[in-house]
Length: 293
Ligand code: HEC
Ligand code: HEC
Image 1 (cartoon, rainbow, N blue to C red):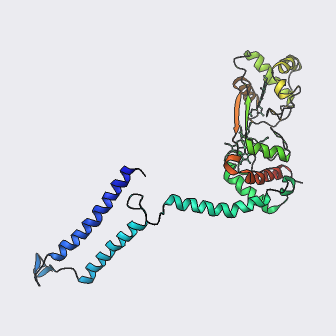
Image 2 (cartoon, rainbow, N blue to C red):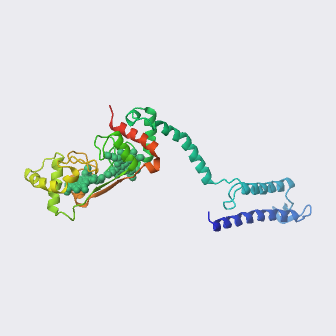
Image 3 (tube, rainbow, N blue to C red):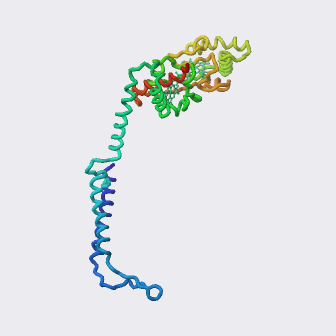
């Protein structure tokens, strides 16, 4: 809290306490004669008395002021001043530490087990599922089946490899997949030929003459990353094109758009956020999703 706010709050609190005390002293000092009235009369003969507060009642007010003074000294209400050193932030940090002590141990206990083996351990999978729902589901979906632009993690198709060590590396370090746009580099009819050729690779019926025209264009512009027959390249995260699994959506219009405008896709690195032990458990969970025996 800045000094300005601390002063502002401290002055308000002090003014309130002093004001309340003054009010009580002032009102208990006025001496009022027995039987005096405020002068208000109702229904002809009902008069409003003007008597001092009973002592026990006044005492209660003094007690509340004493309570306020003790509370203000112990907990931060005079700006951030507190004799106990308590603050919401310190309490939050303490709770985080406690949670880390109990859960951290759980994840550390899985750290030395190989992923293949961990993927058969129900306790590890249940912990992995919780981590996935909290940290990954917003992009990959709570069932891990992905969405347009976010890969499905439950199938056998991998951008960066599906071996346990490869999955763990993907989660740890993240990835950036870059498909360059050819809108400026290739004329529209060439990009149309390439879109048809990609559909041909995926198994669609395409006019043989167009496939023949498309083949050398693909070899010249695309095969360096996607492979000579569109088999993909996991070092670059270039998807296999020779199947009907699409990261950015099926359909000729989408394929043409990807070729024209390119795509830049990011998997954020998780080790800095979650630590190596949690990543290990997540890798086992993801591995288990695609390996249902
Ligand atoms: C902000 C969105 C986002 C979050 C959060 C996210 N991912 Fe990803 N993830 C992606 C994208 C996008 C890709 C594909 C990157 C590419 O196309 O190069 C990806 C790729 C992957 C891959 C590689 C898939 C393959 O086919 O090789 C794995 C494994 C993965 N994510 C697991 C996870 C796990 C586990 C978490 C949670 C700890 C997670 N991701 C959180 C967006 C996200
Ligand atoms: C520099 C390497 C590189 C080159 C060259 C390249 N691509 Fe790509 N391409 C990629 C990468 C990487 C991705 C995945 C982008 C991502 O992670 O989202 C991709 C994605 C695609 C996709 C989307 C696939 C899907 O599953 O949705 C299509 C279609 C595609 N490329 C076609 C082509 C064609 C046609 C050419 C040649 C004109 C080409 N690419 C050239 C790297 C390349």
